[in-house]
Image (cartoon, rainbow, N blue to C red; front, side, top):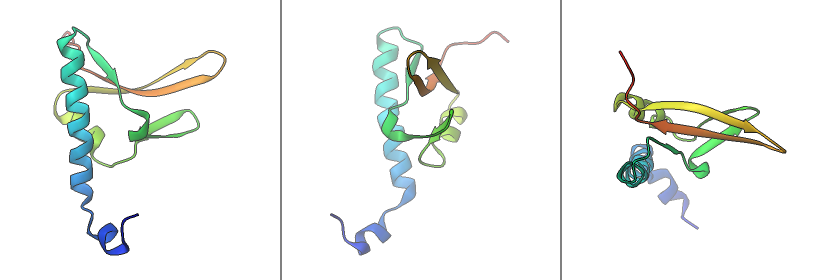
Length: 93
């Protein structure tokens, strides 16, 4: 367990940067396989009812600023599956 002093010293910007680095690796791997989207890892997201968001403020905004489309998705079967999809499909217009 980290100490209270270590917890106070954690920089939220570095945590966001770490999340973005993880997403960058995932996007690169998916794009190399010809895919146009990925699902954000569940451990980066939080769910409340039927809505989901990134746990860290700034992640969604950084992705959108970089040109990605970030959407909330769901699929209802026996249980409801919720996720955040990050896509880089070219759009007309």
